[in-house]
Length: 267
Image (cartoon, rainbow, N blue to C red):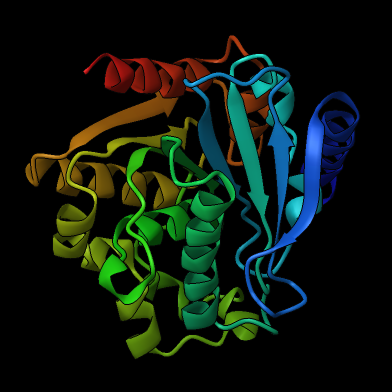
């Protein structure tokens, strides 16, 4: 079911590599899968920002080779796009994958010399991982990144319903693992770590009932905490093409992300 969407993203990534300046396969750890691709804007200024894209695929499919597609839209907007790889299941378990993404964020900030605003964008399982980044205790790391915004697209925020599905055959989560890696169970940690982050929780009109339910509940939970959060229910989209349309610079979600950036810059 990932074939057609991943083909579109692969072609978009190939085009992005042709049109932008790139630094590919930059390591953020010692593991073979711990690499980030950086797509540079056509011009640099003091206003450059960093967008890290975290791919989905139920933690067991896809890679950074299909994750550079949005750099085409961003190349004239003074944005560095970072497409991150992680060890998909069964090689990587959930605890390990979450720790990899957190280390990738630290490495990306080091790559850009700490000075740029950071925005996260994740789709499906990638939205789950982005939400876990927002809930990080950064005292355990060498730096505390300032994450200005997060675009969480068709995400999974409570892993407990996955335990009894086919997805868990490869991911192999126990209830304990699912609980400690569920963003919906880590709301105090998120408020402590990312109190000023502008968060967009986006869901497709034709997402499955479980995806829609989780997105709506996570949005409500964040809103009740007093966080800066928007819910975007995107019409005429499904679980896959909602992220495909991020390659369109006029698409609503892209505009929301830019609005958050400009609002923060104006403060």
